[in-house]
Length: 151
Image (cartoon, rainbow, N blue to C red; front, top):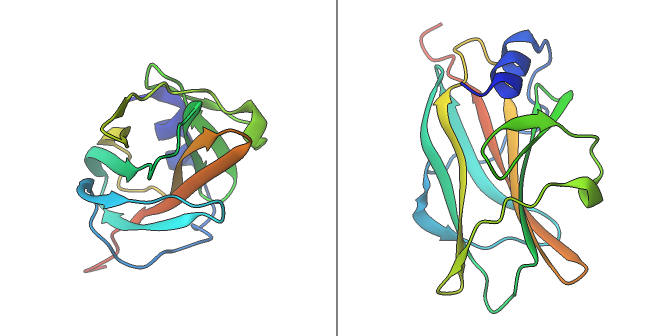
């Protein structure tokens, strides 16, 4: 597991601040559109495993100059994904986001986000994917929260 994200999940003592409407866990089942206000991409309830979480995004003619993936863990710790798939600390400034260099194919981008066990004791993660087109950042937000059913 990538060190920064899993460590932060297990140590976090805060509850996910934003919970979004239920949706499919895997965005490659659907094509999403991002917005400057942040599109809702859904919520995943999990006991730990997150299998190949990807988001397919339609660009609708936008030409991305950079693609980004970032997360807020337990409403307190900020991380961003490097283009190699590692999670590193992030200061929260959108201008400092690392370009993940996801390719554009047929006016779409597939954002690879996670494929790991984030721990059954996770305290919630807000994942955001986005791209820059000119001076505009379009993004969407996805919630990962603990599966408390049966507890």
